[in-house]
Length: 340
Image (cartoon, rainbow, N blue to C red; front, side, top):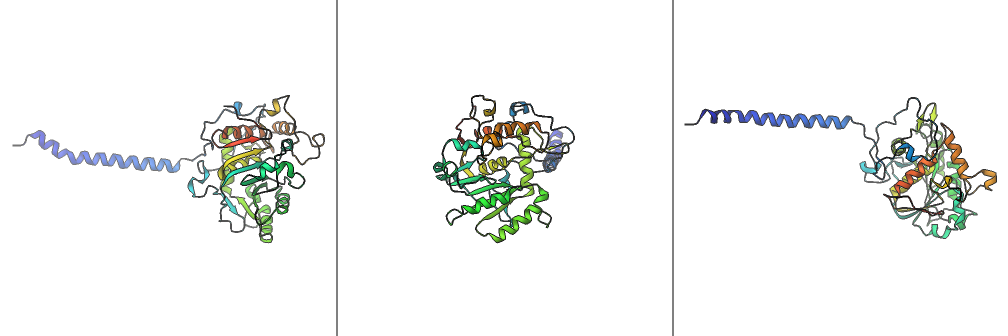
């Protein structure tokens, strides 16, 4: 004869199984809903903890975060291309729009617009890189000894893309087909006929088939701003205006996504302007003289005084220095190594 305890245990087994299954299902549904609604924020490209604002910026910065800030909205976590097989997802052809930029280089020479590039005569070395990246309308003609002769990709802001295009077309050949990547605020890049920069780019792209024109999608632009804010703790949308990311920021982000080794020419460290013995350089190497145009450091400090409509060059350089510890980035002309 079976004991009462045995009957009790057998009768309760189905209830116990139902309880366990129900508990698992409830938790699965709960956590799935939670993850769906949580806003994903990009993490630093180097996957390192963000430094404090005081550590990042070397000078006293005005209070640029006063007042409400506008969230750029949900964006993909870093790296941006995790949702695509193409690392350069978000850079799209101006004409076809959906066609993404596809380019991978073992060694890239990223040539700064700074006057520091005139101190090394590194043109031949720059030309040896598989890919050469330039910014805005920095010229090649007349400066070949220092900046080289080739261009693979030129990154330009919406305010100078016409000048950048002129420089690009001067050095095009069948062996050196250039690509022009233009970034700009959403209102200038609208494709509904109301985006002035997009309209001009479209016309140029139809007339000049030897140049490939690319633009950043709205999502990619939001990502770039959110990445800067996560890395520095500095809000780009400030009271009654914006702090603008520099073309150097967009160019470095692109380089980390397309290059195995990035050799940066003409970019000084963030500490350079605080070193009284450091060599001074013009803000742009194609300015006539330092006396005429002012030094790079003078421009940087002037930017720091502005609460809006300015760049934060010191903060950007500190981020580049930190990224170099996680990406293969080296600095030349002047040559310097990041602090460990």
